[in-house]
Each structure stands twice: as C-alpha cells, then as structure tokens.
Image (cartoon, rainbow, N blue to C red; front, side, top):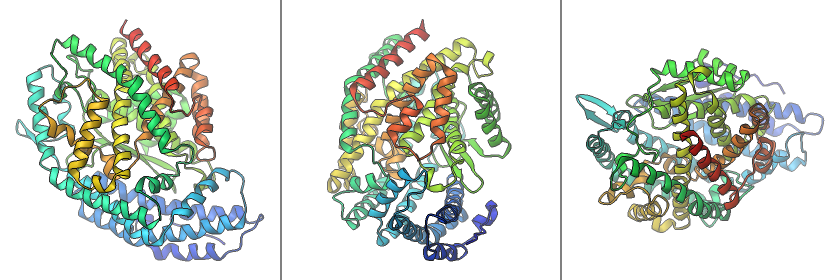
Length: 568
C-alpha cells in the first residue's frame, strides 16, 4: 500500500480521525510475510508518527498557555475522538504482528514490549485514559494561575524564586510564607481533583483484572527489567547512604550560616540551601540559549549542531509567564523529526542546569530518530533520564567563560558544587516521591482520602529529609504531594530520575578518566533507542543498571570527594 500523510504541522493539527482510519483499516487487512514486513512496518510507523506529533503539538499548546480555551478545546477533541480510535487501531496492528510470528531485524525488544501492551489493552479503558489526561490538564490549570503580588507586581510562584535568593533571612521567610499561603488556598481544589484521579486509576486496574494500579502502571510503562521490590531496595539504600550524605551537607550549611536549624525558607525549591552569594544571572533567555550552544559545541560538535537547529527553528520556549504550566520538559515531533523544549526560566543558575538537562533529552531524540521505525525508538524513561542527567555532568567541564560558558572559574566551581550537592539532596527526595506512590497504589482505599495522603507524605518526609526543620509548618510539609506534578500528571514517573542519576554519575566517572570516550559511549547508547534492554543500554553508556547499596555508595563517595576537591 502507499500512504500519503500530512508532513506540515498545520495540516497535522487540522486533520481528523477520518483522515487516518482508512490507512489503519488497510494495514489491518493487508497480509504480511517475510517479504513485505518492512514496507508494512514503515506504513504503520508513519501513522504512529503523525498521531504522536498531533498529540505533542496540542499538548504543547495547552501547557504554553493554560488559559487558552481554544487550545484546550482542540486538545480535548483529540483526546475524545482521535486518541481512543488510534489506540484501538494500533492494538489490532500489534496483535496482527504478534500473531504472524515474524521478528523483523531490531524488533526483539519492541516485540517484548508489544506483548505486554497487548496483555493490558481493554477497549473499555480508553475513555478512562482520556479522562486521566483531562484531569492532568485540570491540575495544570490550578497550578498555572498561582501568583503572588509583590511590590505591585503579579509574580508566579516560580517567578518568586529569584527574589528568595536574598541573604536577608527574615525577608526570605516572609516571601516563603506568601508563596505557600497562596498554594494552600488551592488545597481543597487539588484534594477534590485527587479523589477523581484515584477513581480513574483504580478502575483502570480493575478493568484489567489486576490487583492494583501499581500492577497496571508497571505494565503500561513496560517496566520489564525490574520490579517494585527492586524499588524498595533502592529506597533502603538511599536511606542508608544518601540520607546521611545529604544531612551532612545540610549541617555544613547550617554551621556556616550560624543558625539553630535550617528552615524551609533557607532552601530553594530543590532542597538546596540558599547561600549569601547566589550565582550571577545569565541575562535573558536568548543569552541562556546562546551560551548553552557554546557549551554543547565543546562537549561534542554534533550536539552543538543539534542545539543550533533547535534555536534556528524556534523549538525552544524558555521564559516563565503567568498561565504557563509548571515545570520543564522535552517532547518530540516525530514527523518532522525534531524535539521541543519547554521550561520556565526566571534568571536563576538552576535554569542553566534545566536547559542542559532538557537538551540531553533533545539530543536523545535526534539520535534515536535515525531508527527506521517508531516502534524501535522508545528506550524507557529509566534510560531517557540518563540522557538528560548524563548531559548535565558531561557539560560540567565547560561552564567557565574561558570555555565559552557562563561563569568565571571560581563561580563555575561553585556551580558544580551546587549541582553535585543537589544530587545528594535529590536521591532522598526522589525516595519520598516514589515510596509515597508505592503506598498510595497498594492502599488505594486509604489513599483515596487526601488526609491519609497528607499523613503518609509527612511521615516519609521526616524519614528521608531529617536535615531541614519544618516544625510548626506541618500543613505546608504534609501537602508537598500537591506540588509534585508527576504524582498528578504522570503517576509512578519518578523512580526513573533516581535510577538515571545513579547511571549518570557512573557515566561521569568514565568521563573523568576520558571525556571524549565517555561522550562517544553516551551518544552510541542514545542511538540504540528501544532496541536494547535497560541493563544493555546502561552498560553501553558505561554504567550499571543497579539498585544496590554498593553501587549507590560508590556514587555518593565520588560526589562527596569531588565536592571536597572543588571546595579546596
């Protein structure tokens, strides 16, 4: 058969299911054998790409402006009319390929994932999956309009962060309370939304004859190389090794500042202590992009060329404004074979790390787009985050101005120290988020009550982050799960960051021995997409896919030793 599909974004966005249904129907009916399987897969891949790009572009529109009613209407129309029909058609094509017994070249791992996808597909779950995405949009709308009036200016919660970097501790406390008071005004609204989210997720599992949503989500995310038990082992390793390291870091800053205890307003949003001398701002978002490109050119000329393409084709939206959804992400447009970066830059040094992080995802997309079939390109989020976190560390030697970077040498060293200390602080925080979700979805009846979630989150917070004093701030502490968008919009998507951070530190360890060789291994691993298992991808990149205390302990030791060297 010959498929002619739209190749321009405007045509993709204006298409309907009627434009694609005949092609899917013909693919379902078309016989396949060893001689024509390549052509058949190419046609199927083309259809998947155009549907994926339609979803990505509509999703970008509603996150760029959560107040854009027309964008929301178009996205909801897609979710209601195109998405479920495409999912059903895609399921029939998976079943057809699996029934054929054919294994095209490079399809061993994709076929393994397809078997899992096929095992949990239920037609009557499609409306629930649509509803789940709509609830994610509702969450964005709540968070996106949270603002504070400061000296006559309306600022987003994110936009308050630069002001909070002040050395004036009483002022920081005042600003912190203003931000949290605004967030707590939406407490009931988010609680009500949570009850709906839990209802949808519980029903998805029930419809699939699985004991709980964790079992369902594990299969939906095709986590085939590890189990929930492995995650719990990782939590224990973090408690044993990363929590003491993070606590030592907090105590160091408490002692330096001469305060009785570190309070939440002594920390930024990433649990890193606010210093008396914040790193200088980079200017505006154009300068941020320009200098980032210089750094990537130093890491590897091809990576620099990828980023230059993104700048030239306006595939970056970086500034923070009212109405914009929270956070940062990199998505991809598979028809045009381009990534897109969304973030909320406000002039802080953390924005430097964010653009480097999201660019790692973008480079991954460029590399894996070389694979011929869409079904081969998904490596799993556990390795996708190695691409981003690994890039943060691979770029670290080039942050100084004499390398084309942002900072004078002493400031570049400070940036690296902050980055490494954030890694120590992150593993315990990640454990809170992941352990919370394991509890939620194995105690669904209890977790459907938001007050039970408050209590569990607070318990985990005290267990994993003992170095920061939240006494008298119990309401603010226990509602931390309200402010973690992944819990609401991408359930169970968080252990990936912890595992990938461990992988990234190992990639960096290789780079300390031979930077060029480490970058070459990294790029080759990215190019494999989803054609290898997670252990194979990590090994190719120069790391071990691990949960154990020994591997984590080695990583913590390297991070702490490097911090000490940089401080000297």
